[in-house]
Length: 363
Image (cartoon, rainbow, N blue to C red):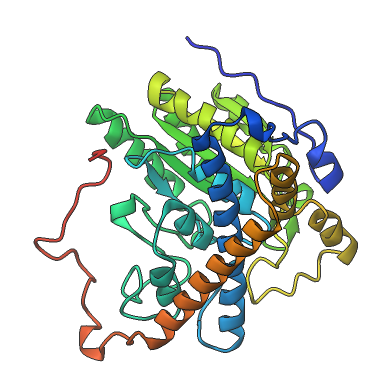
């Protein structure tokens, strides 16, 4: 039997310790191919777009334009973009309720995402899903799920379908560290390794499961170690470093695609806002938040790009202007879009004939 990959032991809990020994530096501009330069600048723009989109969503929530719950990705952009960019178009993503940034990184139209948050007919789920249920079958983005750990068994099922159909697709299952205490996580991990399924189980460890710190709700505080019970390959990475996240995810995706083996990948990151917009975050100190803000993933990556000679002030201003315009257009599109007609209340309750598509085919 193939031996699991040796896990990387990354420090955690404090921002300083999370960075120790893991921060990667971009190579000098003269060593980069044009494709690599384009990729790095695209990552920076995507992270900035996710940040500005989430800030706009928070503002729209306070204006009562968005109802229900709203869980923001602010602070986690490096983990989001670094992991998702390691996928191919045929691969599938199953996410959780903090998925706006995941959808944007996958290429889902920000206008449709914002419209979905507004509950509008032009949204990704025609206004029926809202913040926690962004879905785009064309992008193989299989949705966010409100129940903690609820999407993990679905991701394993999709990986089994891929295996059954002899496809070369891979499944990325995204969840928080709190989900690793759910029974479904352990059942899914056991089956993934037992059946050699092509799945990457990405645990986004932002140190808090709702308002509970990781030491308060998990006997094992380093999530990658939970893979040891299933003899599964595991790795722990600095989730505030997009380069480190992308490299680790690429290794895990390659293992899934070519060796047909799963990986538990833990990315240690931090969310600057509360669990949701309804959470004031009083359980954290201002000093802790400030400590992590000093390692802001967007600012630190921008500094690396500047040091490598890949971006200057003028280019940065151009990127910021494009992002601001795209976010403003998303808000405008959402505000001007119609709400669903009351007569359509019962539409889409069941799958309608002629509108089915099989998932897991890799097509």
